Length: 142
Image (cartoon, rainbow, N blue to C red; front, side, top):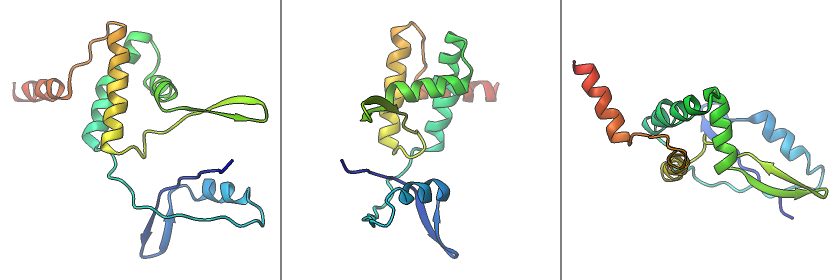
């Protein structure tokens, strides 16, 4: 089975800056002296700060208030529910938790919609981004 690794890197004046250099080095060490192919792809446009603000400031906040979990715990719960994948290793089923950090705008929007659908199932009303930002503007201008 092929192992797929994904690490963010950017070229700057000092050379190649790998976001998680230690994790990257640990991952490639596993190949030993066998060698490996390294593919380079352009990064998709990441999700916006506005999306991230809405996700944490509204979706995660309201769900954590409903459950009594901290916002960090709720964020982890949501990632495990909607961004994890199941792999079989050594006869065990293991769930790998994904990250929101590298989601594109479209992927992050889909993820937020899944979180809102979950909230709706439990009667938690999540305002749309438009409603949320309109409410903020109204409070600021009062």
